[in-house]
Length: 136
Image 1 (tube, one colour):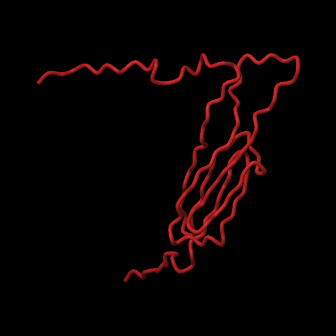
Image 2 (cartoon, helix red, strand yellow; image 1 turned 180 degrees about the horizontal axis):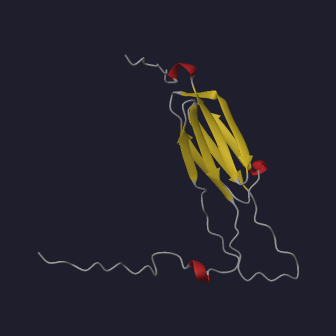
Image 3 (cartoon, one colour; image 1 turned 135 degrees about the vertical axis):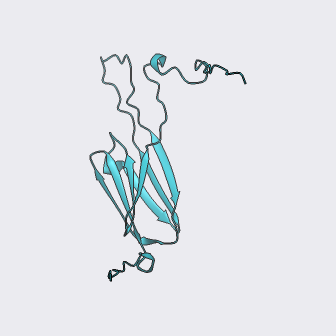
């Protein structure tokens, strides 16, 4: 058996050259999401620094949860020359198919410190029942 030395493929040409983008270019990025489960339901945490709660829209249609936001990039004041602009805003939309165990009438959302929290409660009959076992 012969060992073959690993040679990574060159990245130039495969990925955009972020260090040499024009000053006013924007890269579209979707926010990252954590999905956590508790005994009572699920919590989605959407990381969105620079946005406010007014920028978001959260909708539930049947079993589809959709989180969207839109914010325009701030315009440059007259007399200011931009050498590089990496803070870019635009619009995004993320959708999540909800399981049948979610009570879609009791979805709640809050926004704190750049994170949108969406709380999804489980239906009462689907919560796991806790039984205490007596040790004999």
